[in-house]
Amino acid sequence: MSNSTEKLVGQLIIAGFRGKSIKDDSPIVKFIKDFNLAGVILYDIDLELGGKDLTPGTRNIESPVQLKRLTNHIQNISTRELLISVDQEGGHTSRLKSVYGFAQDTTWAHVGKLDSPVLTKQFSEDTANTLKNAGINLNFAPVLDLDYGSGRVISDQERACSNDPEKVIEHAKIFIKAHRENKVITCGKHFPGLGSASGDTHEGITDISNSWTVKDLQPFDKLIQDNELDTVMVSHAFDKKLDPDYPSSLSQNIITKMLRNDLGFEGVIICDDPSMRAISDHYSLEETFKLMLDAGVDLFCLGNNLIYDPDYIPNAIKSVCNLISAGKIKKTRIEQSIDKIELLKSNYGIGKK
Image 1 (cartoon, helix red, strand yellow):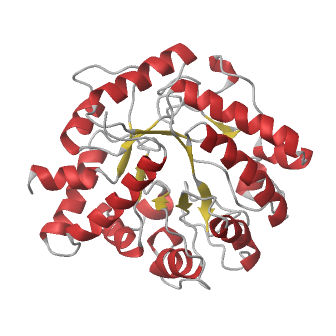
Image 2 (cartoon, rainbow, N blue to C red):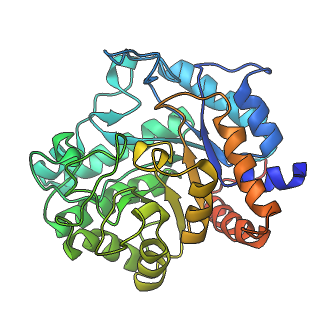
């Protein structure tokens, strides 16, 4: 497969990597240069190196000064500005934590309980400012999943704002507006709604067939209609009512028919990390990419943090290149997604240097 095809495919990849600093011979530097990656995703904790106690500061983040130096270095590698992403939802699911010297924040669930537009605005502006100052331009938030109460993974981790779709919509709009004002892209997640899930897609198949309802769609639907969502992340949850054969992230019914056609979403569709066991235990890398591309995924978040594999990124790109060589995926399909990603970046002033 030609180098030009690898560089084409690489533009659909956001890659995770190890290191709080990078050198000229760091693998991520080679991947950015060789594959023309769309960007990177940063974590504070390395799930292997951090051990059972999940020791803080074992991956990419240890202080504001260090992080800014890292993001500057990453941007200097590429001839065009990259997407530098994190999950900064608030509380437990935040990478820029107070233990590293960043401002103390609260959980998205607490934001919902306070139910104060003024306080939500302050929380959102603080989050967006922190990310902007750190050199981060893509935040995988807000969570649009509904709060189903205890015993549900999203609720137990205090990641859901409310069980009332109207409240989720209200606070998400404030969150998105603050990020847009700071030129930080946001991402509504986890389509078509993960709030009712009692299992964790990181650990295996999560079946929401008996718990998901149309109510879960309401925040996504309204925010799409109001042109608030630039990107949507699709979960790996399975719902036999929506697709009897495939989990959400591999499903044409859910991504193309429901999200694209029925809800009219025209932005960038991102998959949750395909190394999560809900996917990786059941599909090969090549099968995963074939199904996701056919389903309509545009941007692949390859965090490479559940089980670190130094060859994960090149193997992923090779898998897509093999699909193109075999005529199973057309280059024009890849180019369609690149066009959406480049339009998004252009809208936020992210482009060629």
